[in-house]
Length: 265
Length: 354
Image 1: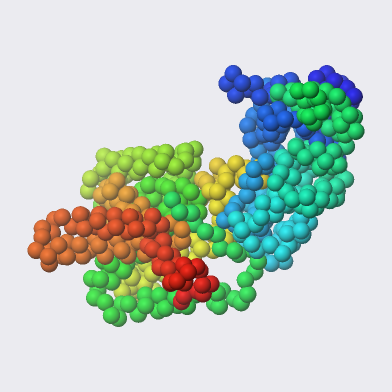
Image 2: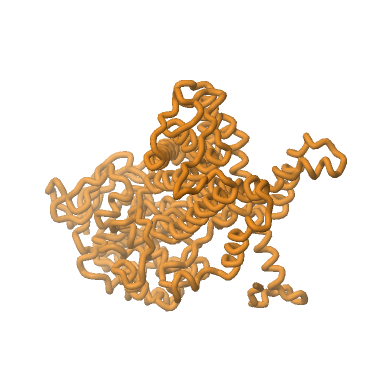
């Protein structure tokens, strides 16, 4: 295992981020006097699946928000497949293949499952300002139906979102994240609130993603996180303090003390 | 403020559009078509035509407020601007200013300029939300009112323009009560249908998404600001059409048309009718025009001073909003829900009253 504050094992000294799906350099985020993130360096290869773990307040979601452009980092640079996206607005990052789900479901509750997924598909395609109603059978509508089937919501496709169970809403979040040929997805606690059966379904969906689609998953359920990731990054107090393979992280006494409840803390 | 509900449209609905029009719409359409045979020319012009025109302008506000979550008090300014442009580029009694260009050039030009005006105002207004949007659009409406009153080179100041008349087309004098009624009815139906259609198109769905969760829409790849500004442009066309018809009906346009009171009237119409569906704008307009036209006579009949007719109008609106924050559409929903409720258990019977 390496000390992540220096560099990760996937990292090298190459400048410009060639070959990386995501490259974070010295990312920090301050809210007034509070430093939510500090000195974050991370590189993720295309197709890599990584879990970011840490206790509440560790800065995981803030890190996601910086990557997706929900708010800009105070310092540092973000490169996405070699391109510097640090100052790009959120929609420009999405159009380059970056997707995310939210910790709290941010769905359009007045719309149906189909309409939610359709909006997600339309957002990364042409015709966002189209005044022409979509027709059944057009390419985008077919893609919408396929995505709904991917997350096993086909029986609820015409159901308004506010009538879905919480687990179904999380599945819908994933379907929306998969829209428009994503290259990299950020999953923010996708298993939160799911039943054991739904968690198994979630694991199947995540492990069944195309191999070229990489992701970072924030997850408190260690069982889910370690089963769907090949690398784990541990965060604490806005900083990365450990990185390694799932087995290494599980066995690390420092991690156990801080996060898994196996220490004296 | 009530949100406009989305109509589930993406799965193609069975049957053609003809089958999908509810029976109540056919009845309403028939009533509106035969109305001229049963009402006096005064009622036809001052109530029906006036209500349809105000309904169109309120519809533009409903589109922004109901689907986009942006309550704009500048819609009357957009309508008035279009009316002014028709007077400036077309014909009026003020020959020193009016250019006398043909109608087929003047009307598209007026609408294009109105869209540009709407986009400029929208670009400013979308940077705010909620009460601040109302305030900034109110400020713009007030500024436009005072500008038209003080500018004599383009807007002819306090007097404005008179003798602004619709063109004679197909041998029809469109100023006539019956012809003008059908002209306004046609455009009101077109605007209503287009708003319904667009609300279900990608642009309208995205606008509702922006209303519900702008942050999420940005995370889906949408340019939230651009969508909101585009909504202002679209609403500007509808308001502009209403403004042109209003100018033709009154044969004049002056600063009074775009006063702050007139701007607030449009908000009152939209809120009283209900912002959750486009039909609310027209229902609100009919109630507003009826009160405005007959409140004075009503007071005099009761032996009271007719000058206090605004009090009756205000009380009418107060009662509607007091009993239903969703306007008359909300009252209708409550009525339907109460009819559908089992009187003993209070549970929904699952039956839909006609």
